[in-house]
Image 1 (cartoon, helix red, strand yellow):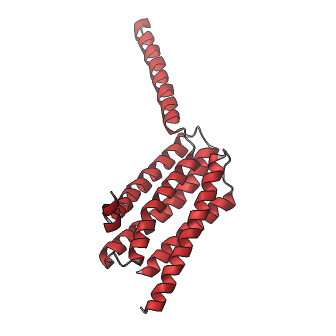
Image 2 (spheres, chains in turn green, orange):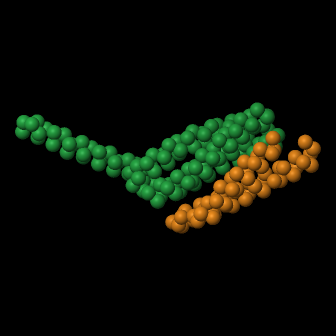
Image 3 (tube, chains in turn purple, yellow):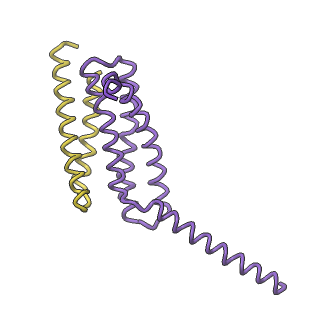
Length: 132
Length: 60
């Protein structure tokens, strides 16, 4: 192999290695958070969204269709919250594992999407609309 | 559903709600103090959330 080509190959390998290391550090830095506290915050947000729905049902302010649609979201988020809790443990035990970070982030995204749907029901409640 | 049954379910839902709120507060306090909540606290929080959703279900 010509010397120039070898140099280019070595330079390419060094630059590639640096990019991989920087990407890994950014990834770790981005996800470096207290996963247990983070999953707790999502659980609390679910509670803050769901409780007004239950209270509105108690006051007969919600029709069946709306209530059950909100209940479905509550049932959907329950296993996600529980899984997130387990993954937060894994994330805490292996803070530099890209796989643990990915799994946590993936389930977190699903939980937040479901949470937003639950919050939409809360925000549409007559009592919530009246106070906002 | 009779009024008495509805009242009983309402009271149960309120009770589950209060129990969850208490567990959540204790969890929050642990985190604020910098310690990691114990597995028992976390299991309790999970169970209480499940019970709250079941109580909400029953209201329907």
